[in-house]
Image 1: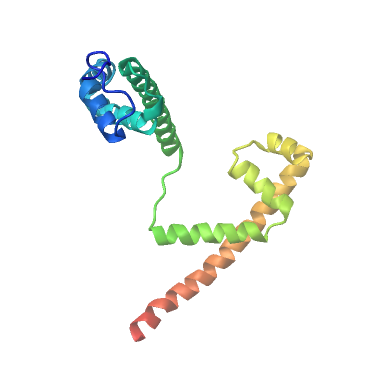
Image 2 (image 1 turned 90 degrees about the horizontal axis):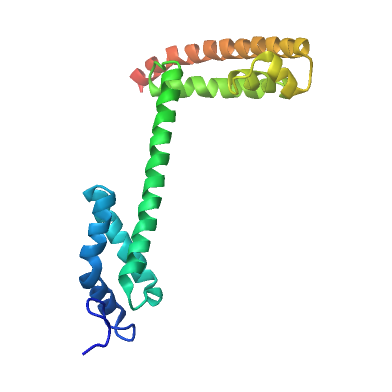
Length: 194
């Protein structure tokens, strides 16, 4: 018979799979009970599995008296899971906040993609300074006075850049929309004849 303490599996000189099975038989119920005291049953089951996965990966590090080591692993996994859940809740809250703050978007995915493409091509036609002015105000949400600080110019100069950028972008989008409408009006006829 083995000389190890009651409830602990045989020393590491045997088959690794047998040692892990012996660890499971000897300690799984106790580790699960520990986890159930600190979390819900589904999470406890997941963490129990992860605890023994860590034991399998680090089988050579598992001491002869394995239960305390397994409980420390389970505790660390529980803390990691709690941190992940907190990050998930924070992300969900932030996404909900952004969704509520964002203007509602209407239209088909195709029209939204076309509009996005139109705006990106319009931005590409602007000078670097004009593009920066639009992006600092529209995308970064800065007031013109703060955006002027970032752009390294006076507020008056920034207002001029922003005005020119908006005017050029609007002209591009209007011209591009006219071209798209012309193409769009001929598309159904082409499709019907094809």
